[in-house]
Length: 68
Image (cartoon, rainbow, N blue to C red; front, side):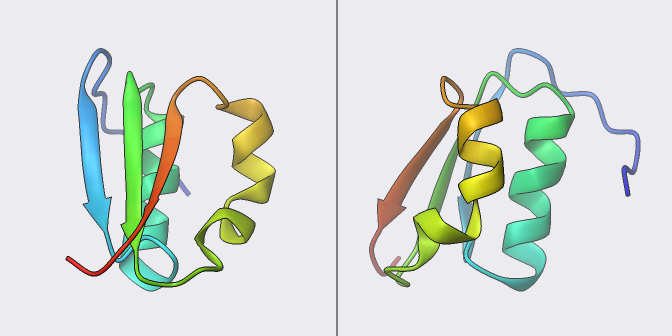
């Protein structure tokens, strides 16, 4: 479900990205044509959560596992 935001050319750093609202925001920003998204979470499963998006957005999506 898209909320219609447009953020082309912007880079976002999103914490809590492995689940819930953080995960939804990562997906929404990528679908809204963000230039890049850095997904941050302390869960080592972070990359597995976005396996479906990693191929489609390989040049835009980066992962950081850590506690912020």
